Picture 1 (cartoon, rainbow, N blue to C red):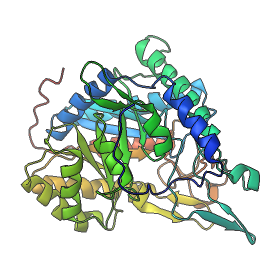
Picture 2 (cartoon, rainbow, N blue to C red; picture 1 turned 180 degrees about the horizontal axis):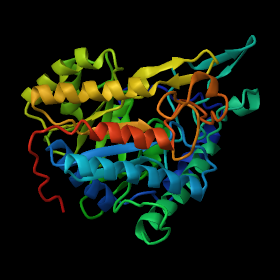
Picture 3 (cartoon, rainbow, N blue to C red; picture 1 turned 90 degrees about the vertical axis):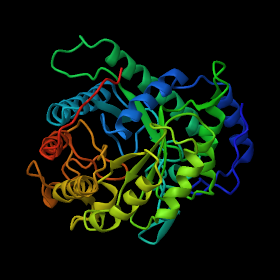
Length: 405
């Protein structure tokens, strides 16, 4: 087990009530098999190098917060939807598309408040199934470290489904399956991530065994923080969410911490600024990073900056806002002569009613099939329609996909 430097107290961590139970869980995870293998992470890193160099696009998507009881049909629908989207993008941009799911590990969520109050009752916030339950009861909302073991088991089962579906493409003629499929999640729970980090005997480098691609979120991207220190210590490709308050010096500091050797494919910046801010805030960041000579991947997350509360009381996102942020992201990169590397979406293959627009989903329809335990997701039809609209953004500039094999 490698020693990973964590110089500050980690942010957004649960208040585990029993240190002995937590230590027991950590020991069990240290003795458990990893979810992904180092050579798979290295392959994704090469694919993301093509994204950073303008020779490919990244399509990353999946649940806001995975549940522990995922079914084969649910995984199959998500993979099928991502594959249909990837085909639309590849045909229009004349570029290969790297498909990465928010799958097999997205069981923890940061929260803006540590507590939630309903009808005068205050309880800990729901932080994802690997921490506590969404039900508003003291029992469900108490952080339980044993949930991390259940999350690890669920991740392994989901990863097995993914490998089976991708490995046997002739399975269902009604479903599309990508040639390659990688998995990702936010590296939030360091009590889960650190015990599952392994040293690869081939290279002597440490790899996070929980996912091919891990990212730090908007709330945990402090260049001197514990989460960035963890990501700096593993050889996986990594990403950082970048919001509207980010400054150029912070991005340069993140590059120095996470990609000091400036290796294409190592670092991706995922931009989540909101439709109103992206055209104003993004250009300076891209200019400064480009001037540093570092080739990072740039990806648009048009979901998190465009959330609002509907009259029904549900958190939602408007399809038009999501699309407008992506348009703004592409406009900035085209104006600067840099590569808009792709999109990162919260979406599902199910016919839910959580985001409004594009598919006759209005505010009044939200209660009908609002199934997310956290943030609203694009449904299957909205996801495919978004891919069609993004495909329309394929510029007239000549592109050379090159060889990425």
